[in-house]
Length: 167
Image (tube, one colour):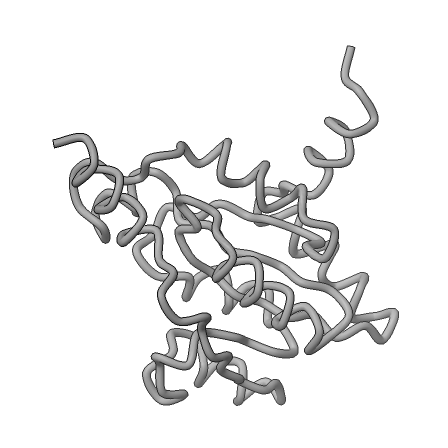
């Protein structure tokens, strides 16, 4: 038997067809849907700050989460440290996250094109013209925004620090 907390978490983790319906309902209700994506391998204060700021840009925050296989292709062997089910559950546990969807591709273009969020968000290390899905969101009347990262925090640096302490 699942607890209420487990049900709440699982209810936030959606497949794309169901999430498309949910997003359409939110938008029909006049809610602004914000979308961002990433690996979110070792959740840290940089991630939390970034996602909290992203959530403040609209009414609903949707996170596209790279699957284990796409993470491995992007980040290399040994990644992810946490599997996609654990990473999705951790993100879903955040009160300001409304939905998480796992994707297999290397980029979230299919997710963005399908969901058509009102606001697409990435870190400020990207320029708007280089953000995957920006053209599609803007052509649909949406906005693309960037958010500054908290300096000194990354999953890669945390993993390296751990590895250096072990050896």
